[in-house]
Amino acid sequence: STWRIVETPRPWLAPWHLTTLLAMLVAVVALAVPAWFIAQAISRPVRAVARAAERARAGAELPPMPTGGAREVRDLARAVAAMHGRLAAHAEGRTTMLAAIAHDLGTPLSRLAFRVEQLPEAARERAAADIAEMRAMIAAALSFARDEAVGDRTRLDLGSLIESLADDMADAGAAVMVEPGSRAVVSGDAAALRRLFANLAENAVRYGDRAAIGWRVTDDAVEVTIDDAGPGIDPATVERLFEPFVRGDPSRNRATGGTGLGLAIARSIAARHEGEVVLENGPEGGRARVTLPLAG
Image (cartoon, rainbow, N blue to C red):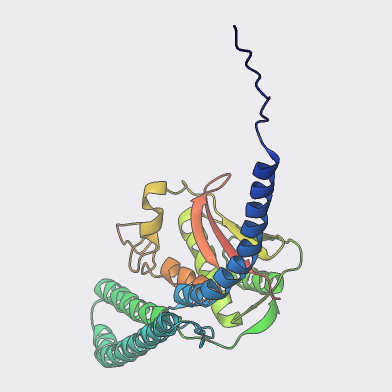
């Protein structure tokens, strides 16, 4: 008169569950591998265009642009190339305009320099200093514009270049010292790189009494530091100091000199060599740090 209920134990994963899950895993792996290769093939030209866009600046050579891929990628590549062409044309026009202005200003400045010779001695010295400062500003503006042009690149020993510059500045009476590091070979425009380090060293001497230059080599780059013994750098104003015609000494007195283009020129040259310049505080005062890639 009673019922007996018998239940068979059921496993959490039955054999057919395991078979289904294994089949799904095999299908996912089989689809993921070709999907990854397809995604790489699609994104490769996009990455090439992105690298080219990062290097698209006046004076820099544009790397080869992808010619294949989807129609949208080809359109993007043509747009980046056209943008680079416009930048180059703009820079060339600006340089031509500045050269014309400098030439036109040179004649009246020469006449002024001749006429101030007739002034009394005290007034003559002040007027001559004003004329010299105007000529220096014109020359610096032209240098800033021309430094965006691409010069001949060669493999060079950066340490030898820095030591030669330091010797020349020391012979001229500047307090410049060098702490040599390992041999560093870079690919670049020797004249432009010399100007880069000369501007930074002159800034260190002008605002920090001395310049101590050293460098160290990492796996794929060389890091050059220029330390001074000045009051240091306000982090809030660092980026502004790289803007053209901005000086560390806002009073613009002749004791410190300068036109406010030295750091802008230095950063422009470093960027053309795929490097960077940063300002920071060093052990005693301010520090300029330049990073450049080693030659392949």
